Length: 201
Image (cartoon, rainbow, N blue to C red; front, side, top):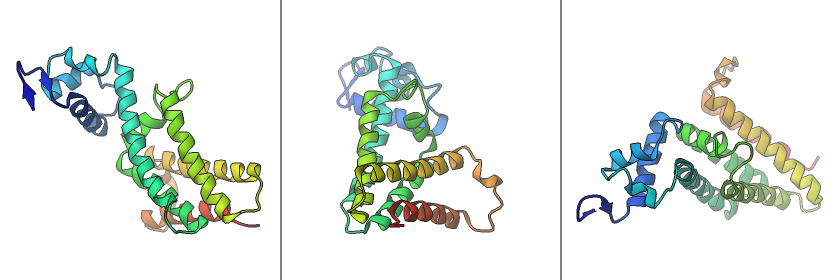
């Protein structure tokens, strides 16, 4: 809703984030600017700067929104009654689904100026939560495993899932000669990674 001279909206920050996510989904984050979003939302060029002082703060807000979506899914799975191995499979499939549906947002979240030379502290917090959820699923399946072993298994599982998702996003997987439907390949890869992570042998 526009107020007064048309430059102020009741939820300008929310409108900018919504427009920013739509822009990233369509064009990626590299060409996104605060001025572009101002034009899209229909406010003065300076209005967005009350919420986002620079381009990086805008990109960070968009990445945070992506992580919040991702973590909401992960928490639901984490709190479910599934066993550890099944829970890991669900977590892996949820991540693959997210990166398949939102490939350009995932790139902003994991492979952008927000993560170089190291992830922004806000993004590190989300990644820590995600790793904790993975560790919890593994520990519930392997109650006698040491903390170090659980940690190694969690890193191995995450590496497999993220690596597979990245290969798919960059369209490298189609070069493999699978005689299976893509959905079957995804399910099989994720299930194998989960089985190995939660295996007692």
